[in-house]
Length: 127
Image 1 (cartoon, helix red, strand yellow):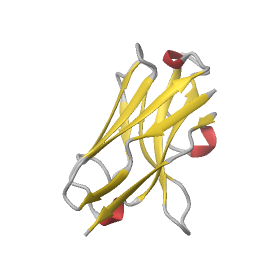
Image 2 (cartoon, one colour):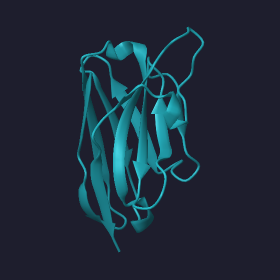
Image 3 (cartoon, rainbow, N blue to C red):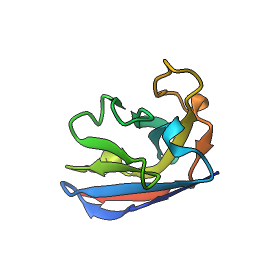
Image 4 (cartoon, one colour):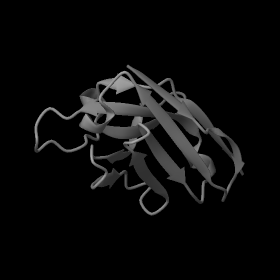
């Protein structure tokens, strides 16, 4: 299983970035997907998650209304659109996959519940 995140970079405060994550080696449409982020010295934190079919999305309070998660099951990809970025959003962003173990499962917000992880992409927001 491989999750390849891309789209990070340097952006000025107030700008936007769109992160992408390409998945391979798994039945993508059977996995909930999530984005997490981590800054030096801090624990990795939940950012957003999307259900296997894209019908349900979940966000950390800190990014609600600012970030949008989406997916394209035909292309095995998940995206994170980030708008109105501020320096506090600077972090390494990771995409993750969570197996849908039951028909009633929903995407998790805890990293321990994710089965697959990408290598991360760095987002730096300058003030």
